[in-house]
Image (cartoon, rainbow, N blue to C red; front, side, top):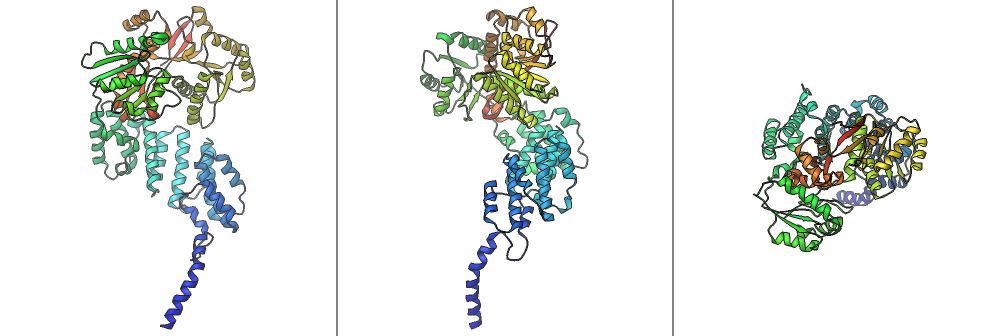
Length: 571
Protein backbone atom coordinates (compact mmCIF):
# COMPACT_ATOMS: atom_id res chain seq x y z
CA UNK A 1 0.00 0.00 0.00
CA UNK A 2 2.81 2.41 0.86
CA UNK A 3 4.40 1.69 -2.48
CA UNK A 4 1.11 2.55 -4.25
CA UNK A 5 0.80 5.77 -2.28
CA UNK A 6 4.40 6.73 -3.11
CA UNK A 7 3.64 6.03 -6.78
CA UNK A 8 0.58 8.23 -6.66
CA UNK A 9 2.52 11.05 -5.00
CA UNK A 10 5.29 10.73 -7.61
CA UNK A 11 2.66 10.87 -10.38
CA UNK A 12 1.19 14.07 -8.89
CA UNK A 13 4.64 15.66 -8.77
CA UNK A 14 5.46 14.53 -12.32
CA UNK A 15 2.29 15.65 -14.16
CA UNK A 16 2.81 19.41 -13.72
CA UNK A 17 6.20 18.93 -15.34
CA UNK A 18 4.97 16.71 -18.16
CA UNK A 19 1.89 18.72 -19.13
CA UNK A 20 3.68 21.78 -20.52
CA UNK A 21 6.18 19.50 -22.24
CA UNK A 22 3.36 17.69 -24.01
CA UNK A 23 1.86 21.01 -25.17
CA UNK A 24 5.11 22.77 -26.02
CA UNK A 25 5.26 21.36 -29.51
CA UNK A 26 8.95 20.50 -29.66
CA UNK A 27 9.07 16.78 -28.99
CA UNK A 28 6.12 14.99 -27.52
CA UNK A 29 6.23 12.64 -24.57
CA UNK A 30 6.68 9.57 -26.73
CA UNK A 31 9.61 11.01 -28.65
CA UNK A 32 8.20 11.53 -32.16
CA UNK A 33 9.29 14.71 -33.96
CA UNK A 34 7.10 17.82 -33.98
CA UNK A 35 7.84 18.04 -37.70
CA UNK A 36 5.15 15.38 -38.19
CA UNK A 37 2.52 18.12 -37.83
CA UNK A 38 3.37 19.06 -41.42
CA UNK A 39 1.49 15.92 -42.44
CA UNK A 40 -1.71 17.40 -40.98
CA UNK A 41 -4.03 20.27 -41.92
CA UNK A 42 -2.98 23.75 -40.78
CA UNK A 43 -6.06 25.20 -39.08
CA UNK A 44 -4.65 28.34 -37.47
CA UNK A 45 -3.93 31.75 -39.00
CA UNK A 46 -0.52 32.76 -40.30
CA UNK A 47 -0.24 35.25 -37.40
CA UNK A 48 -0.58 32.34 -34.94
CA UNK A 49 2.28 30.47 -36.57
CA UNK A 50 4.43 33.61 -36.82
CA UNK A 51 4.04 34.08 -33.05
CA UNK A 52 5.05 30.47 -32.53
CA UNK A 53 8.25 31.10 -34.50
CA UNK A 54 9.19 33.83 -32.03
CA UNK A 55 8.32 31.71 -28.99
CA UNK A 56 10.17 28.55 -30.07
CA UNK A 57 13.85 27.89 -29.36
CA UNK A 58 14.50 24.67 -31.29
CA UNK A 59 15.75 25.39 -34.85
CA UNK A 60 13.90 22.45 -36.42
CA UNK A 61 10.65 23.50 -34.77
CA UNK A 62 11.13 27.11 -35.89
CA UNK A 63 11.48 25.85 -39.44
CA UNK A 64 8.33 23.75 -39.09
CA UNK A 65 6.35 26.74 -37.86
CA UNK A 66 7.82 28.80 -40.73
CA UNK A 67 6.54 26.23 -43.22
CA UNK A 68 3.11 26.25 -41.59
CA UNK A 69 3.01 30.05 -41.68
CA UNK A 70 4.04 30.14 -45.35
CA UNK A 71 1.46 27.48 -46.23
CA UNK A 72 -1.37 29.46 -44.64
CA UNK A 73 -0.15 32.76 -46.10
CA UNK A 74 -0.64 31.32 -49.58
CA UNK A 75 -4.30 30.63 -48.79
CA UNK A 76 -4.58 34.14 -47.27
CA UNK A 77 -3.36 35.70 -50.55
CA UNK A 78 -0.09 36.80 -48.92
CA UNK A 79 2.14 35.23 -51.55
CA UNK A 80 5.09 37.69 -51.32
CA UNK A 81 5.25 37.18 -47.55
CA UNK A 82 5.14 33.41 -48.02
CA UNK A 83 7.98 33.55 -50.55
CA UNK A 84 10.05 35.67 -48.17
CA UNK A 85 9.59 33.11 -45.39
CA UNK A 86 10.54 30.19 -47.63
CA UNK A 87 13.68 32.01 -48.74
CA UNK A 88 14.88 32.09 -45.13
CA UNK A 89 14.83 28.30 -44.76
CA UNK A 90 17.95 26.16 -45.07
CA UNK A 91 19.23 22.76 -43.90
CA UNK A 92 15.73 21.31 -43.81
CA UNK A 93 14.93 17.74 -42.84
CA UNK A 94 13.60 15.50 -45.66
CA UNK A 95 10.08 15.81 -44.22
CA UNK A 96 10.32 19.59 -44.18
CA UNK A 97 11.77 19.74 -47.68
CA UNK A 98 8.91 17.59 -48.95
CA UNK A 99 6.28 19.92 -47.48
CA UNK A 100 8.15 22.99 -48.73
CA UNK A 101 8.00 21.62 -52.27
CA UNK A 102 4.18 21.51 -52.14
CA UNK A 103 4.02 25.14 -50.97
CA UNK A 104 6.44 26.21 -53.72
CA UNK A 105 4.36 24.44 -56.40
CA UNK A 106 1.23 26.12 -55.04
CA UNK A 107 2.87 29.54 -55.29
CA UNK A 108 3.97 28.85 -58.88
CA UNK A 109 0.41 27.86 -59.83
CA UNK A 110 -1.05 30.98 -58.21
CA UNK A 111 1.43 33.09 -60.20
CA UNK A 112 0.26 31.32 -63.38
CA UNK A 113 3.67 29.71 -63.88
CA UNK A 114 2.00 26.52 -64.97
CA UNK A 115 4.97 24.69 -66.53
CA UNK A 116 7.13 25.33 -63.47
CA UNK A 117 4.34 24.27 -61.10
CA UNK A 118 3.80 21.05 -63.08
CA UNK A 119 7.52 20.25 -62.92
CA UNK A 120 7.57 20.92 -59.19
CA UNK A 121 4.63 18.54 -58.69
CA UNK A 122 6.28 15.90 -60.86
CA UNK A 123 9.34 15.93 -58.59
CA UNK A 124 7.24 15.12 -55.51
CA UNK A 125 6.99 11.47 -54.45
CA UNK A 126 3.26 10.93 -53.88
CA UNK A 127 3.91 7.75 -51.88
CA UNK A 128 5.60 9.80 -49.16
CA UNK A 129 2.68 12.19 -48.69
CA UNK A 130 0.01 11.95 -46.01
CA UNK A 131 -3.65 12.27 -46.96
CA UNK A 132 -3.61 15.94 -45.98
CA UNK A 133 -0.53 16.60 -48.09
CA UNK A 134 -2.06 14.74 -51.03
CA UNK A 135 -5.12 16.97 -50.82
CA UNK A 136 -2.82 20.00 -51.13
CA UNK A 137 -0.92 18.32 -53.98
CA UNK A 138 -4.14 17.86 -55.95
CA UNK A 139 -5.25 21.41 -55.12
CA UNK A 140 -2.15 22.59 -57.00
CA UNK A 141 -2.88 20.21 -59.88
CA UNK A 142 -6.42 21.59 -60.07
CA UNK A 143 -5.15 25.18 -60.03
CA UNK A 144 -2.77 24.47 -62.93
CA UNK A 145 -5.62 22.97 -64.98
CA UNK A 146 -7.90 25.90 -64.14
CA UNK A 147 -5.21 28.36 -65.24
CA UNK A 148 -5.07 26.54 -68.57
CA UNK A 149 -8.88 26.48 -68.75
CA UNK A 150 -8.82 22.68 -68.82
CA UNK A 151 -12.07 22.24 -66.91
CA UNK A 152 -12.32 18.45 -66.94
CA UNK A 153 -8.69 18.00 -65.86
CA UNK A 154 -9.34 20.40 -62.99
CA UNK A 155 -12.41 18.38 -61.99
CA UNK A 156 -10.39 15.16 -62.07
CA UNK A 157 -7.79 16.73 -59.76
CA UNK A 158 -10.50 17.85 -57.35
CA UNK A 159 -11.95 14.36 -57.31
CA UNK A 160 -8.55 13.09 -56.19
CA UNK A 161 -8.45 15.84 -53.59
CA UNK A 162 -11.87 14.77 -52.33
CA UNK A 163 -10.59 11.22 -51.72
CA UNK A 164 -7.99 12.64 -49.33
CA UNK A 165 -10.16 15.04 -47.36
CA UNK A 166 -11.67 14.23 -43.99
CA UNK A 167 -12.43 17.75 -42.74
CA UNK A 168 -16.10 18.54 -43.44
CA UNK A 169 -15.57 22.24 -44.21
CA UNK A 170 -12.72 21.57 -46.64
CA UNK A 171 -14.74 18.79 -48.26
CA UNK A 172 -17.70 21.12 -48.80
CA UNK A 173 -15.45 23.83 -50.22
CA UNK A 174 -13.91 21.34 -52.65
CA UNK A 175 -17.32 20.05 -53.72
CA UNK A 176 -18.53 23.62 -54.26
CA UNK A 177 -15.45 24.43 -56.34
CA UNK A 178 -15.86 21.27 -58.41
CA UNK A 179 -19.46 22.20 -59.11
CA UNK A 180 -18.49 25.78 -60.03
CA UNK A 181 -16.01 24.40 -62.57
CA UNK A 182 -18.66 22.20 -64.18
CA UNK A 183 -21.14 25.08 -64.27
CA UNK A 184 -18.54 27.20 -66.08
CA UNK A 185 -18.04 24.56 -68.78
CA UNK A 186 -20.07 24.69 -71.96
CA UNK A 187 -22.65 21.96 -72.55
CA UNK A 188 -20.61 20.41 -75.34
CA UNK A 189 -17.72 19.77 -72.99
CA UNK A 190 -20.04 18.12 -70.46
CA UNK A 191 -21.87 15.98 -73.00
CA UNK A 192 -18.81 14.86 -74.98
CA UNK A 193 -16.45 13.94 -72.14
CA UNK A 194 -15.88 10.23 -71.56
CA UNK A 195 -15.73 9.12 -67.93
CA UNK A 196 -14.90 5.48 -68.63
CA UNK A 197 -13.48 3.85 -65.51
CA UNK A 198 -13.99 6.95 -63.36
CA UNK A 199 -17.26 6.57 -61.48
CA UNK A 200 -16.83 9.82 -59.55
CA UNK A 201 -16.30 11.81 -62.76
CA UNK A 202 -19.26 10.05 -64.38
CA UNK A 203 -21.40 11.15 -61.43
CA UNK A 204 -20.27 14.75 -61.68
CA UNK A 205 -20.91 14.86 -65.43
CA UNK A 206 -24.35 13.29 -64.96
CA UNK A 207 -25.19 15.87 -62.28
CA UNK A 208 -24.11 18.75 -64.53
CA UNK A 209 -26.08 17.35 -67.46
CA UNK A 210 -29.20 16.86 -65.32
CA UNK A 211 -28.88 20.46 -64.16
CA UNK A 212 -28.26 21.91 -67.62
CA UNK A 213 -31.14 19.97 -69.16
CA UNK A 214 -33.65 21.13 -66.55
CA UNK A 215 -32.41 24.59 -65.59
CA UNK A 216 -35.00 26.36 -67.73
CA UNK A 217 -37.76 24.29 -66.10
CA UNK A 218 -37.08 24.70 -62.37
CA UNK A 219 -40.22 22.84 -61.38
CA UNK A 220 -38.72 19.68 -62.92
CA UNK A 221 -35.18 20.34 -61.73
CA UNK A 222 -35.69 19.10 -58.18
CA UNK A 223 -37.00 15.75 -59.45
CA UNK A 224 -34.01 15.48 -61.81
CA UNK A 225 -31.65 15.97 -58.86
CA UNK A 226 -33.45 13.34 -56.82
CA UNK A 227 -33.21 10.92 -59.74
CA UNK A 228 -29.48 11.65 -59.93
CA UNK A 229 -29.05 10.87 -56.23
CA UNK A 230 -30.80 7.54 -56.76
CA UNK A 231 -28.39 6.72 -59.59
CA UNK A 232 -25.26 7.78 -57.64
CA UNK A 233 -26.11 7.14 -53.98
CA UNK A 234 -22.45 6.80 -52.94
CA UNK A 235 -21.19 9.91 -54.71
CA UNK A 236 -19.61 12.65 -52.56
CA UNK A 237 -22.05 15.21 -53.92
CA UNK A 238 -24.96 12.95 -52.96
CA UNK A 239 -23.79 13.00 -49.34
CA UNK A 240 -22.84 16.68 -49.44
CA UNK A 241 -24.78 18.57 -52.11
CA UNK A 242 -23.08 21.63 -53.63
CA UNK A 243 -24.19 24.65 -51.61
CA UNK A 244 -25.51 26.34 -54.73
CA UNK A 245 -27.98 23.51 -55.34
CA UNK A 246 -29.57 23.48 -51.90
CA UNK A 247 -31.95 26.34 -52.68
CA UNK A 248 -33.33 24.38 -55.62
CA UNK A 249 -35.03 21.91 -53.29
CA UNK A 250 -37.05 24.83 -51.83
CA UNK A 251 -37.97 26.30 -55.21
CA UNK A 252 -41.44 27.77 -55.62
CA UNK A 253 -42.54 29.15 -58.96
CA UNK A 254 -43.11 32.91 -59.10
CA UNK A 255 -46.76 33.77 -58.56
CA UNK A 256 -47.72 37.44 -58.48
CA UNK A 257 -51.13 39.03 -58.03
CA UNK A 258 -50.26 42.72 -58.02
CA UNK A 259 -47.14 44.73 -58.86
CA UNK A 260 -46.35 48.30 -57.85
CA UNK A 261 -44.16 50.27 -60.23
CA UNK A 262 -42.14 53.01 -58.49
CA UNK A 263 -40.81 55.57 -60.98
CA UNK A 264 -40.11 59.32 -61.18
CA UNK A 265 -42.93 60.55 -63.43
CA UNK A 266 -42.76 64.29 -62.80
CA UNK A 267 -40.00 66.87 -62.52
CA UNK A 268 -36.57 66.66 -64.16
CA UNK A 269 -36.47 62.85 -64.26
CA UNK A 270 -39.94 62.44 -65.77
CA UNK A 271 -38.63 61.61 -69.28
CA UNK A 272 -36.46 58.81 -67.86
CA UNK A 273 -39.27 57.40 -65.72
CA UNK A 274 -41.93 57.59 -68.42
CA UNK A 275 -39.61 55.87 -70.93
CA UNK A 276 -38.96 52.98 -68.54
CA UNK A 277 -42.72 52.75 -67.88
CA UNK A 278 -43.47 52.66 -71.62
CA UNK A 279 -41.14 49.69 -72.03
CA UNK A 280 -42.65 47.94 -69.00
CA UNK A 281 -46.22 48.49 -70.23
CA UNK A 282 -45.49 47.38 -73.79
CA UNK A 283 -43.76 44.21 -72.56
CA UNK A 284 -46.74 43.49 -70.35
CA UNK A 285 -48.98 43.91 -73.38
CA UNK A 286 -52.49 42.62 -73.04
CA UNK A 287 -51.77 40.59 -69.91
CA UNK A 288 -54.56 41.64 -67.57
CA UNK A 289 -54.16 38.73 -65.17
CA UNK A 290 -51.90 40.84 -62.97
CA UNK A 291 -52.84 44.23 -61.56
CA UNK A 292 -50.18 46.96 -61.92
CA UNK A 293 -50.19 50.12 -59.80
CA UNK A 294 -47.86 53.01 -60.64
CA UNK A 295 -46.63 55.52 -58.06
CA UNK A 296 -44.72 58.70 -58.91
CA UNK A 297 -41.77 58.79 -56.51
CA UNK A 298 -41.29 62.52 -57.07
CA UNK A 299 -44.82 63.40 -55.96
CA UNK A 300 -44.91 60.74 -53.22
CA UNK A 301 -42.06 60.31 -50.67
CA UNK A 302 -40.50 56.87 -51.00
CA UNK A 303 -41.51 55.67 -47.52
CA UNK A 304 -45.13 56.62 -48.22
CA UNK A 305 -44.93 54.87 -51.60
CA UNK A 306 -43.67 51.67 -49.95
CA UNK A 307 -46.45 51.79 -47.36
CA UNK A 308 -49.02 52.39 -50.09
CA UNK A 309 -47.73 49.38 -52.05
CA UNK A 310 -47.89 47.13 -48.99
CA UNK A 311 -51.30 48.28 -47.83
CA UNK A 312 -52.61 47.93 -51.37
CA UNK A 313 -51.77 44.23 -51.38
CA UNK A 314 -48.88 44.23 -53.82
CA UNK A 315 -46.78 41.08 -53.84
CA UNK A 316 -43.94 42.75 -55.77
CA UNK A 317 -42.32 46.13 -56.38
CA UNK A 318 -40.47 47.17 -59.53
CA UNK A 319 -38.28 50.16 -58.66
CA UNK A 320 -37.38 52.59 -57.34
CA UNK A 321 -35.15 54.04 -60.04
CA UNK A 322 -33.35 56.97 -58.41
CA UNK A 323 -30.35 56.05 -56.25
CA UNK A 324 -31.38 57.93 -53.07
CA UNK A 325 -34.66 56.03 -53.12
CA UNK A 326 -32.87 52.70 -53.65
CA UNK A 327 -30.74 53.51 -50.59
CA UNK A 328 -33.90 54.30 -48.64
CA UNK A 329 -35.24 50.81 -49.38
CA UNK A 330 -31.91 49.20 -48.46
CA UNK A 331 -31.81 51.07 -45.16
CA UNK A 332 -35.41 50.19 -44.30
CA UNK A 333 -35.75 46.64 -45.60
CA UNK A 334 -38.51 45.88 -43.09
CA UNK A 335 -40.78 48.23 -45.05
CA UNK A 336 -40.80 45.81 -47.99
CA UNK A 337 -40.83 42.58 -45.99
CA UNK A 338 -43.04 39.98 -47.63
CA UNK A 339 -42.75 41.57 -51.08
CA UNK A 340 -40.37 40.82 -53.97
CA UNK A 341 -38.37 43.93 -54.91
CA UNK A 342 -36.65 44.49 -58.25
CA UNK A 343 -34.77 47.75 -57.72
CA UNK A 344 -34.01 49.50 -61.02
CA UNK A 345 -30.62 50.74 -59.89
CA UNK A 346 -27.81 49.83 -57.52
CA UNK A 347 -25.66 51.93 -55.19
CA UNK A 348 -22.48 51.60 -53.16
CA UNK A 349 -24.71 50.42 -50.30
CA UNK A 350 -26.25 47.55 -52.26
CA UNK A 351 -26.12 44.32 -50.29
CA UNK A 352 -27.81 40.95 -50.09
CA UNK A 353 -31.37 41.41 -48.85
CA UNK A 354 -33.90 38.61 -48.84
CA UNK A 355 -36.37 38.93 -51.73
CA UNK A 356 -34.52 41.89 -53.30
CA UNK A 357 -32.59 42.11 -56.59
CA UNK A 358 -30.85 45.01 -58.31
CA UNK A 359 -31.19 45.63 -62.04
CA UNK A 360 -29.95 48.46 -64.20
CA UNK A 361 -27.80 49.38 -67.18
CA UNK A 362 -24.64 49.55 -65.11
CA UNK A 363 -21.16 50.30 -66.50
CA UNK A 364 -19.87 47.41 -64.37
CA UNK A 365 -21.67 44.93 -66.65
CA UNK A 366 -19.96 46.37 -69.70
CA UNK A 367 -16.55 46.39 -68.01
CA UNK A 368 -16.85 42.72 -67.04
CA UNK A 369 -18.01 41.87 -70.56
CA UNK A 370 -15.00 43.74 -71.98
CA UNK A 371 -12.60 41.79 -69.78
CA UNK A 372 -14.19 38.50 -70.91
CA UNK A 373 -14.15 39.55 -74.57
CA UNK A 374 -10.50 40.61 -74.53
CA UNK A 375 -9.42 37.46 -72.68
CA UNK A 376 -11.29 35.28 -75.18
CA UNK A 377 -9.61 37.22 -77.99
CA UNK A 378 -6.24 36.09 -76.52
CA UNK A 379 -5.32 39.52 -75.22
CA UNK A 380 -3.18 39.21 -72.11
CA UNK A 381 -1.92 42.76 -71.49
CA UNK A 382 -4.84 45.17 -71.90
CA UNK A 383 -4.59 48.90 -71.37
CA UNK A 384 -7.77 50.30 -69.81
CA UNK A 385 -8.49 54.00 -70.44
CA UNK A 386 -11.26 55.46 -68.29
CA UNK A 387 -12.25 59.04 -67.38
CA UNK A 388 -11.17 60.57 -64.09
CA UNK A 389 -14.67 60.38 -62.61
CA UNK A 390 -17.01 58.18 -60.61
CA UNK A 391 -17.92 56.39 -63.85
CA UNK A 392 -14.24 55.75 -64.50
CA UNK A 393 -13.65 54.44 -60.97
CA UNK A 394 -16.59 52.04 -61.15
CA UNK A 395 -15.62 50.78 -64.59
CA UNK A 396 -11.95 50.35 -63.70
CA UNK A 397 -12.76 48.49 -60.50
CA UNK A 398 -15.16 46.08 -62.21
CA UNK A 399 -12.77 45.42 -65.10
CA UNK A 400 -9.85 44.79 -62.77
CA UNK A 401 -11.78 42.41 -60.50
CA UNK A 402 -12.82 40.36 -63.52
CA UNK A 403 -9.30 40.47 -64.99
CA UNK A 404 -7.82 39.20 -61.73
CA UNK A 405 -10.23 36.24 -61.91
CA UNK A 406 -9.20 35.49 -65.49
CA UNK A 407 -5.48 36.23 -65.47
CA UNK A 408 -4.52 36.22 -61.77
CA UNK A 409 -2.96 39.66 -62.25
CA UNK A 410 -3.98 43.32 -62.35
CA UNK A 411 -4.89 45.14 -65.54
CA UNK A 412 -3.01 48.30 -66.56
CA UNK A 413 -5.53 51.07 -65.81
CA UNK A 414 -5.05 54.72 -66.74
CA UNK A 415 -7.42 57.53 -65.73
CA UNK A 416 -7.45 60.31 -68.32
CA UNK A 417 -8.50 63.93 -68.38
CA UNK A 418 -7.25 64.65 -71.90
CA UNK A 419 -5.60 62.93 -74.87
CA UNK A 420 -2.23 64.00 -73.45
CA UNK A 421 -2.74 61.44 -70.68
CA UNK A 422 -3.45 58.84 -73.37
CA UNK A 423 -0.22 59.67 -75.22
CA UNK A 424 1.83 59.17 -72.06
CA UNK A 425 0.10 55.86 -71.35
CA UNK A 426 0.83 54.60 -74.86
CA UNK A 427 4.53 55.41 -74.52
CA UNK A 428 4.95 53.58 -71.23
CA UNK A 429 2.89 50.45 -71.88
CA UNK A 430 3.39 47.21 -73.81
CA UNK A 431 -0.31 46.65 -74.47
CA UNK A 432 -1.67 44.86 -77.54
CA UNK A 433 -5.18 46.23 -77.08
CA UNK A 434 -7.01 49.01 -75.27
CA UNK A 435 -10.45 49.25 -73.66
CA UNK A 436 -11.82 52.79 -73.75
CA UNK A 437 -14.72 54.31 -71.84
CA UNK A 438 -15.33 57.64 -73.59
CA UNK A 439 -17.89 59.78 -75.39
CA UNK A 440 -17.98 59.61 -79.19
CA UNK A 441 -15.98 62.85 -79.52
CA UNK A 442 -13.40 61.68 -76.96
CA UNK A 443 -13.08 58.37 -78.79
CA UNK A 444 -12.31 60.21 -82.03
CA UNK A 445 -9.38 61.97 -80.36
CA UNK A 446 -8.18 58.82 -78.58
CA UNK A 447 -8.28 56.71 -81.75
CA UNK A 448 -6.43 59.42 -83.64
CA UNK A 449 -3.76 59.47 -80.91
CA UNK A 450 -3.42 55.67 -81.07
CA UNK A 451 -3.25 55.67 -84.88
CA UNK A 452 -0.61 58.43 -84.88
CA UNK A 453 1.48 56.45 -82.40
CA UNK A 454 1.58 53.56 -84.90
CA UNK A 455 0.96 51.11 -82.09
CA UNK A 456 -1.46 48.98 -84.09
CA UNK A 457 -3.58 48.46 -80.99
CA UNK A 458 -6.96 46.80 -81.15
CA UNK A 459 -9.58 49.16 -79.70
CA UNK A 460 -12.55 48.03 -77.61
CA UNK A 461 -15.08 50.60 -76.40
CA UNK A 462 -18.14 50.85 -74.17
CA UNK A 463 -21.64 51.81 -75.30
CA UNK A 464 -20.95 55.36 -74.12
CA UNK A 465 -19.44 56.13 -77.52
CA UNK A 466 -22.36 54.60 -79.47
CA UNK A 467 -24.90 57.37 -80.10
CA UNK A 468 -27.59 58.04 -82.65
CA UNK A 469 -25.62 61.10 -83.78
CA UNK A 470 -22.86 59.11 -85.46
CA UNK A 471 -22.38 60.09 -89.10
CA UNK A 472 -21.12 57.94 -91.97
CA UNK A 473 -17.81 59.82 -91.64
CA UNK A 474 -17.61 58.89 -87.96
CA UNK A 475 -18.30 55.22 -88.68
CA UNK A 476 -15.55 55.19 -91.31
CA UNK A 477 -13.15 56.89 -88.90
CA UNK A 478 -13.94 54.24 -86.26
CA UNK A 479 -13.15 51.38 -88.69
CA UNK A 480 -12.04 48.29 -86.77
CA UNK A 481 -13.22 49.52 -83.35
CA UNK A 482 -15.27 46.99 -81.37
CA UNK A 483 -17.87 48.14 -78.86
CA UNK A 484 -20.48 46.61 -76.56
CA UNK A 485 -24.15 47.51 -76.36
CA UNK A 486 -27.56 45.95 -75.78
CA UNK A 487 -28.50 43.20 -78.27
CA UNK A 488 -31.72 45.02 -79.18
CA UNK A 489 -29.73 47.23 -81.55
CA UNK A 490 -29.23 44.16 -83.74
CA UNK A 491 -32.97 44.11 -84.44
CA UNK A 492 -33.06 47.30 -86.51
CA UNK A 493 -35.30 45.72 -89.18
CA UNK A 494 -37.97 44.57 -86.70
CA UNK A 495 -41.31 46.35 -86.27
CA UNK A 496 -40.65 46.62 -82.52
CA UNK A 497 -37.36 48.41 -83.17
CA UNK A 498 -38.99 50.86 -85.56
CA UNK A 499 -41.78 51.50 -83.07
CA UNK A 500 -39.34 52.29 -80.26
CA UNK A 501 -37.15 54.32 -82.60
CA UNK A 502 -40.08 56.59 -83.34
CA UNK A 503 -41.28 56.73 -79.72
CA UNK A 504 -37.82 57.91 -78.53
CA UNK A 505 -36.99 60.09 -81.57
CA UNK A 506 -34.03 57.78 -82.20
CA UNK A 507 -32.27 58.69 -78.95
CA UNK A 508 -30.12 55.65 -78.12
CA UNK A 509 -30.06 56.49 -74.39
CA UNK A 510 -33.86 56.49 -74.27
CA UNK A 511 -34.03 53.32 -76.35
CA UNK A 512 -31.84 51.58 -73.78
CA UNK A 513 -34.13 52.78 -70.97
CA UNK A 514 -37.18 51.55 -72.87
CA UNK A 515 -35.50 48.14 -73.29
CA UNK A 516 -34.66 48.14 -69.58
CA UNK A 517 -38.33 48.73 -68.71
CA UNK A 518 -39.38 45.90 -71.01
CA UNK A 519 -36.90 43.53 -69.36
CA UNK A 520 -38.05 44.58 -65.89
CA UNK A 521 -41.43 43.00 -66.70
CA UNK A 522 -39.70 39.75 -67.71
CA UNK A 523 -37.54 39.72 -64.59
CA UNK A 524 -40.28 40.31 -62.04
CA UNK A 525 -42.27 37.43 -63.58
CA UNK A 526 -39.28 35.07 -63.12
CA UNK A 527 -38.15 36.46 -59.79
CA UNK A 528 -38.02 33.19 -57.80
CA UNK A 529 -36.38 31.35 -60.68
CA UNK A 530 -33.60 33.94 -60.85
CA UNK A 531 -33.05 33.98 -57.09
CA UNK A 532 -33.25 30.27 -56.38
CA UNK A 533 -31.94 28.52 -59.52
CA UNK A 534 -28.24 29.27 -60.08
CA UNK A 535 -27.52 29.99 -63.70
CA UNK A 536 -31.15 30.55 -64.62
CA UNK A 537 -31.36 33.25 -67.28
CA UNK A 538 -33.90 35.34 -69.15
CA UNK A 539 -33.27 36.48 -72.71
CA UNK A 540 -34.23 40.16 -72.93
CA UNK A 541 -33.72 43.29 -75.00
CA UNK A 542 -30.81 44.41 -72.81
CA UNK A 543 -29.01 41.05 -72.86
CA UNK A 544 -29.15 37.59 -71.39
CA UNK A 545 -30.00 38.30 -67.76
CA UNK A 546 -29.06 36.22 -64.71
CA UNK A 547 -28.62 36.80 -60.98
CA UNK A 548 -25.10 37.30 -59.68
CA UNK A 549 -23.78 37.99 -56.15
CA UNK A 550 -26.27 39.86 -53.90
CA UNK A 551 -28.82 39.21 -56.66
CA UNK A 552 -27.32 41.87 -58.89
CA UNK A 553 -28.81 41.14 -62.31
CA UNK A 554 -25.92 40.58 -64.70
CA UNK A 555 -26.17 41.20 -68.45
CA UNK A 556 -24.28 39.45 -71.20
CA UNK A 557 -23.46 42.12 -73.75
CA UNK A 558 -23.50 42.00 -77.55
CA UNK A 559 -20.33 43.11 -79.31
CA UNK A 560 -20.34 45.10 -82.54
CA UNK A 561 -17.60 46.34 -84.88
CA UNK A 562 -17.30 49.24 -87.29
CA UNK A 563 -16.50 47.84 -90.74
CA UNK A 564 -16.27 50.03 -93.83
CA UNK A 565 -18.85 52.48 -92.55
CA UNK A 566 -21.23 49.83 -91.27
CA UNK A 567 -21.92 48.42 -87.79
CA UNK A 568 -21.64 44.62 -87.75
CA UNK A 569 -22.78 42.44 -84.78
CA UNK A 570 -20.03 40.06 -83.70
CA UNK A 571 -22.20 37.73 -81.58
